[in-house]
Amino acid sequence: MSQKENQSVEQPQEAAPGVDARRRQLLKLSAGTVAGVGVVAGAGAWVKNRMDGIVHQEFPNEISADFKPMDQRNVNQTYALSKKLQAAHPERNLNFGIESLGPIQPGEKPMHMGEAFMTFLHGAERYDNDKVGYTQLDFALEEACWHGSMSLAPLVQAGVPGQGVLTWDQSDVHEHQYPFKDSVEKVSAIKTAARTFGAARVGICRRDRRWDYNPLYHALTEKTLTWEEDFPFEPKSVIVMIVPMDYEAVSTAPAIPQSATAAQGYSNIAMLAGQMAKFIRRLGFQAVGATNDLGNSVAYGIAAGLGEGSRNGAMVAPNLGPRIRICKVYTDLELDEVAYDTPRTYGIQEFCENCKRCGEACPSGAICMDDKPSMAPTYPGSEDPLYTWDVNTGVRKFYSDPKKCLKFWADNGGDCGACIAACPWNKPDFWHHRLIDASNTFTGGTVHGLMTKADILFGYGNVNDEEAVRKFWKSGFSGDFV
Image 1 (tube, rainbow, N blue to C red):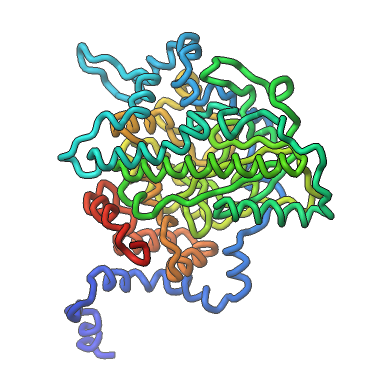
Image 2: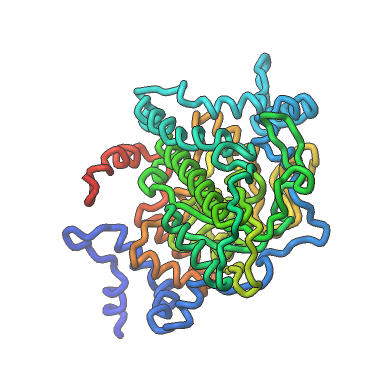
């Protein structure tokens, strides 16, 4: 090729009428991504198996030998709700105010964790009809979405156990156990019921004491509870279910419509866990439903093969991303060992190592920006045990600062969700997004970085976007839903 010809090839071309500039930019990135995506088309069953996840017999993240279950009295929302715990540990409130808020101005009162949590719970009183995403309309939707959860199982989202439909009462267990033929029939019945109740996915794993809060704490009765003396039975299995949140609502993050779909998620999982527990009890087995109480839902979701841990601390589920809510049911119904679901990895944590979009979008700076996961937090102040009392260390993962997150919730008048909205795995279920997901399971860091840039170029993952709020409030007239 002549020098002149070569120069003509490299000259930028004028865009054809109607061609989106973002698509031209994406083509420039495609040289780095086409190999990875192209392999998808020719890799056949191997790629499908990778998208289905690599099966692990043990929990996929490294766990230290001295790992201990989380004391529920150290869960920040439990502490923030409990007057007794705050009286016993006043230094935690002081610590929260100083570390999370930064320098305190003369005469200014440091924020109190309990007060911050109450501010978040009563955010509907702070509407501003001149502020897009924070109007009376937005807060009315959020309050309506919370109505289900607060009626069915009050404050279970804050970890209060045994509430409403998530009761520990086992008096309705049927006196005769249904005569299942085998574990296959048990699994089929449970997963069919879960789908009927509205679960998007369900997995069943063995109860793992490492992921259970121990001791438990009831922040309303101010009682410390034990599994051995207070819980009504010894669980053998945990049924884990997930429901999606609305994509358009999440896209408004951190505005209040995002808080509304999160609230609706909690209402849905309260009903879902309560229904599944009732179903199991009427088959003659003991069962208790749970959402944020009893144990670590993310860990149980991973153990049940439903997803993988991510940079922002949430579980990312294939095809749904972190745009989900998780519930669980503890039961003494037991399966044969081979019938339990097992953990799977999908290339998600490796992708997180090279992405960092959730951390960049986080308005409070709470999300870890390290290149690699660690066995303990590395954020400022993490070396001080008085500051990290609410963090359970000993698992290799990315550690976020939950106090900074809660502080922003209080400032925002609702929760946030910016990390979920920004995540490249948070997409509607279109085929081309699934194609990218497939390539992510086996392509490396350079390609992951290019795919993250492509995600930005196509306009996905924006936060603080007033247009997203306007689009959300018109979404009821889109598609077939009119």
